[in-house]
Length: 305
DNA sequence: GACCAGGTGTCGT
DNA sequence: ACGACACATGGT
Image 1 (tube, chains in turn cyan, orange, purple):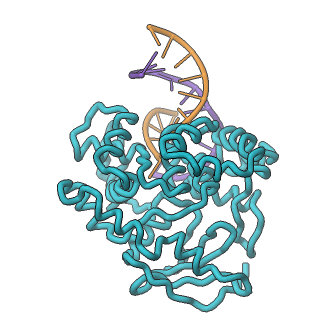
Image 2 (cartoon, chains in turn green, blue, yellow):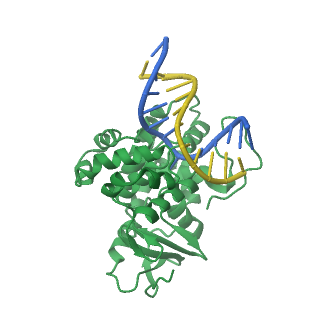
Image 3 (spheres, rainbow, N blue to C red):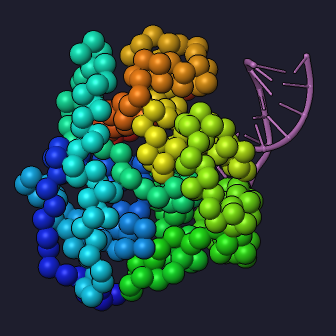
């Protein structure tokens, strides 16, 4: 349990997130690899264990003692130079009060630059599950099948490992019926190690179609993988939360998810996925009751982060 | 115990 | 093409 870390270093961020916003970035449901203990975030970026904490002007961070520098990795992962802040300004917030409110409340929110592998694996676990449960599944997969990088800190398993994994081990990770999705997708991708580069060469529309050919990948998981794993800011995942907020704020009752996805991409434009992230954070913020078909329970007051 | 969860696959019309 | 339902598991 004894992990040796370097001294803290500072990373300046172009658009500084507040501590709650940093929590939303790291643990709001776009990524499932970070956990918070005593104001310090611990996670794994690719093959690199890292720790983060909020800091004036950016974040403080450190890595395992004796490992190669991770400055560039982290700067890219967090979009330190602020590419997203610039495209965010092109979103239609001037004419869209709902979006403007969310962008103001979550200033500094950003899409993490995850690897395609991590995003796909994480969102293969996501169907019909709460974010907390997804994080536990991904953590279990790492602990059970991923290479150990430091005591208690594991990378995610690769597709070849997942393809060969004992069914009982997968089920033991709490995957439920998703174990089949993961095993079958792993079998398909283990045979082509260059899958991410191949798919990455496609335009977003083609990327979404290609991803959706994988078992367990429908429109929503494909959009999340494109957005979070391939950096396609024009991808627009529509889940229960986004569906609710679009229906509520734009009067789109009765619209189907495919139609809502088209609406989102048309209305928000090239950075629709970033707009989605603001709306998602807003929808889940403040212990609002989840989008329920039946009741608006007045008792649902828990913070998920 | 019933109901729900950042959906998807598979059936019926 | 669209709607309904099952799906494993864990939490409330």
